[in-house]
Length: 166
Image (cartoon, rainbow, N blue to C red; front, side, top):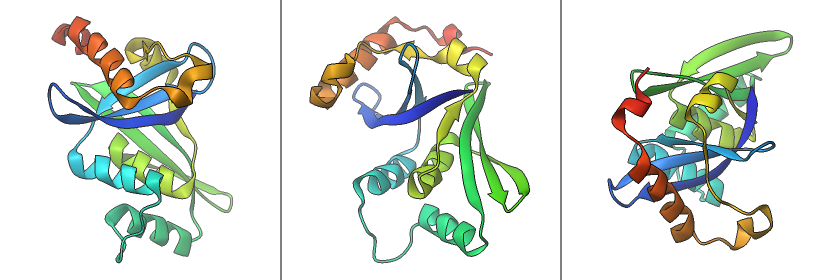
C-alpha cells in the first residue's frame, strides 16, 4: 500500500466536477485523481476547513457513532478501479477485533478526515492510475489552486477514455 495525503479537493473547470487529489507521501509524489460528487466534496472541504455545522452532517454522525461504539478507523484504503468506478474500504478496529467496511472513496475520505485516520492507495492502483503533477516540494504551499488545476487539466487533455478501461 502507498500512503497518501489529501492534497486538495478542486473543481475541474471543464466538466464542473469536483476532483479529489490524493498524493503519495513518499516516493515520486504521484497523485491519484478521483472525481466525486458535489455533496461529498463539500463534506470533505468542511472538515478540512474546520467548519462547524449546527447539527451533525452524515459523516459527522458516522464519526460520532464509531466513537460511541469505541471503534477507530485504522486506515482508509482506495482498493481498486472497476468499470470506471473506484472502490475503498474503511479498516476498523475495536480492541483486538478488526473489520473492513466497503465504501465509496469520497465517503471514506470524509470520515477519515474527521477522524484523523491515514489514507492509502493499493500499490497496483497507484501504479496504474497515479499521475505526476509538477509540484516542487519547496514551493508546495506557495502554489496557487489555479496552477494545480492547470496542471491537472493538462493531464485531462492528454488522457483518452480507453486509458481508464479495466
